[in-house]
Image 1 (cartoon, helix red, strand yellow):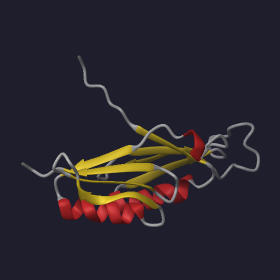
Image 2 (tube, rainbow, N blue to C red):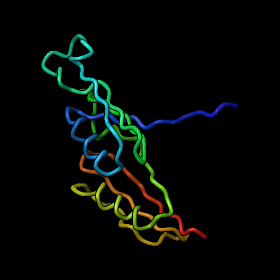
Image 3 (tube, helix red, strand yellow):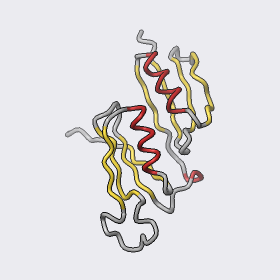
Length: 135
């Protein structure tokens, strides 16, 4: 069977550009944007500057996103999970990504032996992080 890719697509309500620039500052890479106005999408009068599609590429992770009037923190059903073995780098990502958000589980030793933490970032996106013990 050929490889199947699963990509993350986030939805925001008017602050997609701000969120993607924030994620770029943490993960690196480049963000490409297309606004509703550039795409001439009908029915978006007044929201032409909203992002129809954004893609963060060539960084540590790939993220895609857009603005939609239907975005709501009450409809979340997914947490993004980051994993790695470079503890100092992973801790730096956790600290930067959770800034302005709400940490629900600080990074600490978990029962399975790794270091684990979770938070909701300042844009309402749920994140989990597991730093593997390496053994």
